[in-house]
Amino acid sequence: MRDDPLEAETAELRVEPVDDDARARLSDYVCSLGGSVERELQFGGVVVALDETNVSALCEFDGIERIETVDTLGY
Image (tube, rainbow, N blue to C red; front, side):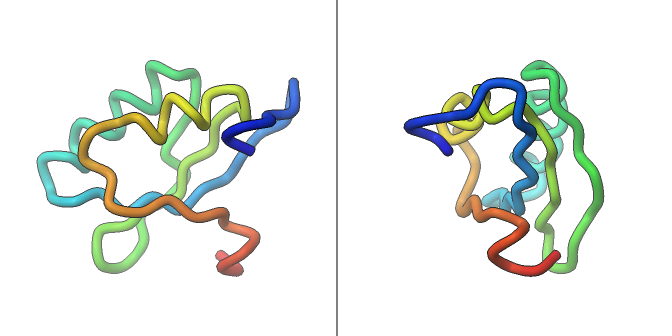
């Protein structure tokens, strides 16, 4: 998905920020990529939705501890 994104496909990802400050910045960053924060999860994680073509940019965001696909985890 990061290396070979599909055009016009949406990715739903579970993102775990490193701390509360990173979490606050993450929402704005995801929105700047044309995505949205879909819901809050326990222990500080969030589910985000964005175009697959922007997954690589999300991975470059400073302050993310982990990114996983929602489908893999069953959220």
